[in-house]
Length: 295
Image 1 (cartoon, helix red, strand yellow):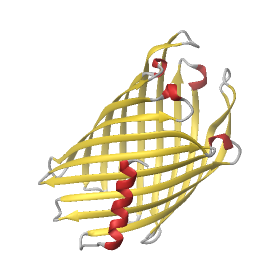
Image 2 (cartoon, one colour; image 1 turned 45 degrees about the horizontal axis):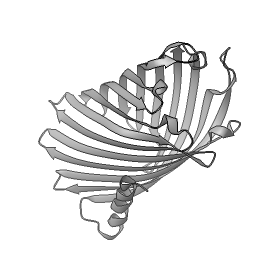
Image 3 (tube, helix red, strand yellow; image 1 turned 135 degrees about the vertical axis):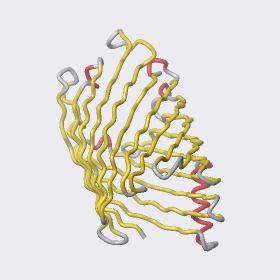
Image 4 (cartoon, rainbow, N blue to C red; image 1 turned 180 degrees about the horizontal axis):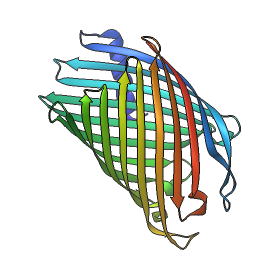
């Protein structure tokens, strides 16, 4: 178990015995039903896919400490699982440890974010991910909040060691606050580089995300659109060329707070994936309904 997972559990455990005035602990249980139009591929040449439904379950424990409204420490442990009705070969179990340490100085906020995740597929170890993300943000004025985050990490695969590698990237973002966090527009750019042991999978990507977020009464509405360009650095053997992928993604999310502890979330999305690799050239429709209880 990694340092981040241990640290997250330590923050959670410590809060059970020591709870100053500016500390809180909590937990959440979330169940969801997901639809995906492109789960099983029948014919990669004709891009013929089968749709499927899955059950999603997530349990999270979290703790939040404040010290003189300056230093904040947040820890979370989460277990989540996905179970497909037909595509059982994609059933997943994920354990995640998350630790965030932030320091505020006036309008400026400095953060250090540590993430560790372990994923299993069909009960077999599949992926281990470690990521370190320092970030700096500032409230430029009452209307603008600016943030930049660096991502550095590594991925290791239990069964595909040739896919082991590391990654780094940067994500600047800007929030236009029309009514604080009740009504705002967010724009985020990202550039990322992945270096893999098997150089065939090395790639660099560029993405842009724009979202409109509006909260009225107990309902929050989010409209989001994204474009991502992914360029592989080396020749892809099956096409004798450099692989190039472009993805367009649009989604609508609605969150309804039914009570103080109970929330209903719905999401509908459409993806258009364009690639010179036939199996990655397809359209996709996604739908999700989630029920969440927090205490």
